[in-house]
Image (cartoon, rainbow, N blue to C red; front, side, top):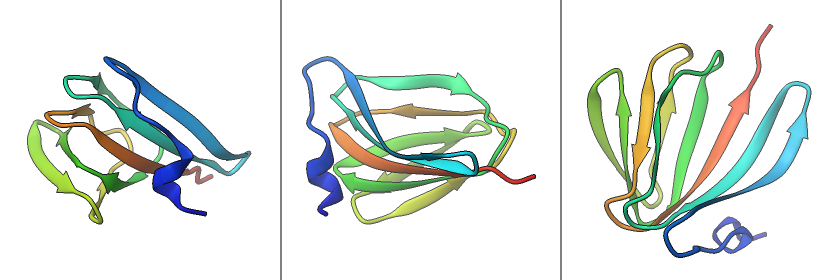
Length: 99
């Protein structure tokens, strides 16, 4: 499976496709068109983001990180984070729930 091909860009939109959903976590692909994003929020579990195409601006606890295709970043549990698309990008989000 080519992860980049699991989802397509849509004009002025954020698109997601859940690839796996289990009680212990989820695996989801996202496509963000230029100018789109997710506002600041927190999550109760660590999340790993892998950029599949383009590059993302990922802000974690007010620190700006530019993450490019082929790179990854961990968004720690309970830390505020947001995502912005200065250019279109696709990502894989892996969230594993701990007990």
